[in-house]
Length: 258
Ligand code: 13P
Image 1 (cartoon, protein in one colour):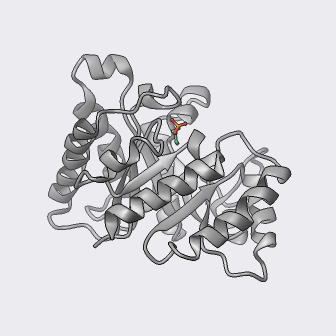
Image 2: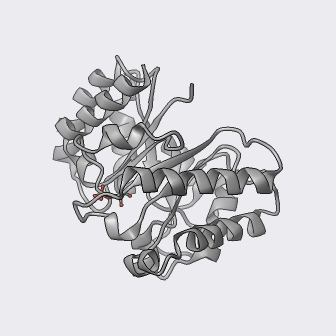
């Protein structure tokens, strides 16, 4: 059975105080769970080195993620962070194409696909966010929207196996931070569409490919969501900042998997 993958996206939240309170107990908690599930926290990137330092002499039971990357490896790109810098501070997973980056930073399918390509080249694991707006949902365009976002990655990567060793986070934009998660059965239909579409293009089963759901995941709705066959884990915003909520979610997922 696949190991579920649970990623906390801290977005623009957190500080040293929270990090000091959060990670030691999380790490202890994960002693019991890390073999059965992969847990990643993506803090604002400047804190990655701080977290890495806290665990420099202790075993770390979770991975560190980033919320973005630049396409270049170095040079005159003020304010950017490169994939090799992420590797330097022990980041393994990188979220790209989040709807908030698309909305506030003019990122699109093409720039996201280029980032996907670079991350794969550097052996980092991309978590590429896709999903529809409420209007697109109402207009029955969910599959088309997801298909376009996926197609651009196939096009830029130029390989039918582009999605090996990667994660797609299906995040309906209207569900993010709204307190209203998508209906689990509907998420299953879309996750299944995504998996079959990618497998069809790859002409075979793809390896180490995961589909996450993101959008108002809480301890109350996670059980129903993880029961769906094609959901392999979650990209969690708000609840990943609350240690109790986050560990409850991990516990529930593990109960369902054991
Ligand atoms: P919420 O869990 O706060 O809805 O955020 C989801 C998200 O955007 C994760 O990337």
